Length: 506
Image (cartoon, rainbow, N blue to C red):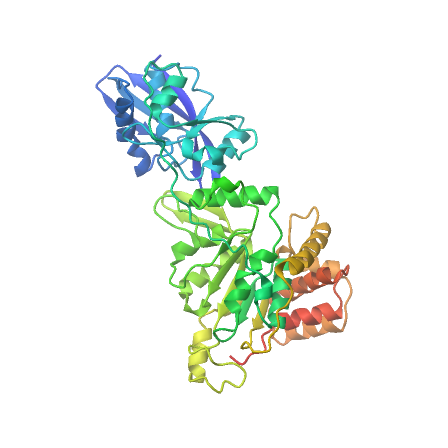
């Protein structure tokens, strides 16, 4: 029976699903159909595959060709199925060995000249294939380094369809073609920035250290030039390296987004994203037609998302962050289906206190009216601010400010606090204090003290919401971890309340 089979992988978000590609050749009027819920880009594979086969010196079968992508109920998108479709058709036509391509995963887009072009998302696709017991994978040469990062993968790199057909016994001359290179990747790095460069700002530096130690969100409010952006950009340097599971998770997101450079191996450092305030909701949380691609919030997974000049962002952008701040993931629904992307990041909001930026302390130089200040800062909604653990005023820089500790020194304390939290949270599924529910923290605390009574009083008077009180407890546990204590006391709860509440008059 003229039937060819091989394997491929479909990506939905960062989740990959192994796909069986079947090509049936019937003795009927020539035609070419692809079934199995393909999108527009995949449907266009008919023209790309036919042209690539002809350009490779192979004869296109004069039959009715039907390609089925199984499971047929799963939506499939993109051009990454081109190579698998071409190999299945050639196997069904008897132009290559029909049995050898069956247990091999083929990934790659075909050019009209038969060359293989690189894809996004190769890392999670290969990882899914290996997990499904299909370790043999054929990818374009430009994706070989990325595919080889998956343990257990048997990767074969190809430059053209003719080369792949020759591997399977096809009688074809393999031309010497120049491989299609990967597009240059612009990777945003914050490496090399030292906390010692920030002069003065003792309280803000302390808040930054606490945020790094517990994975807490941070708000910095101060006039222009106070050092808010400098502090925020140095937060990733205080965070510890990603562990093996986190590294693979973060790398998979950046592979799908097309922002991963495989030359350096898996991503070991927390990512840093700082989108411009003109960014749209789709740019922040992800979007696009068909299956949406990850945005800045997902690319910042296990790292830092900085919104500089936060009140200048559209309210629709700021409100979209409430879901990932609570759940650590984004679920994007489109007509072609839903995609889930991880988004457990540390949010840093930097803001001026008013439109002119000079309202601080006495506000003598500020030209803004009181209602203008309230309206400006009110662009950051209360529900969003309630999810930000640390809220600090950053006063104007002074000439007598001294250089503080370096990033390396502070990062060592942060690592010690993270290890203490990890030992306490072992077996719970939580990694940092910022992820722990308040009920668990209250039960663990066990005893009550003067500061705890003040916390209850602030809750009863409406100064803190119940969510805010829980976040104060999370901060208190982080402060205890930094101090080397087994549990927070009155001093830690008192400092946590101070870090939670701004003293500024904006």
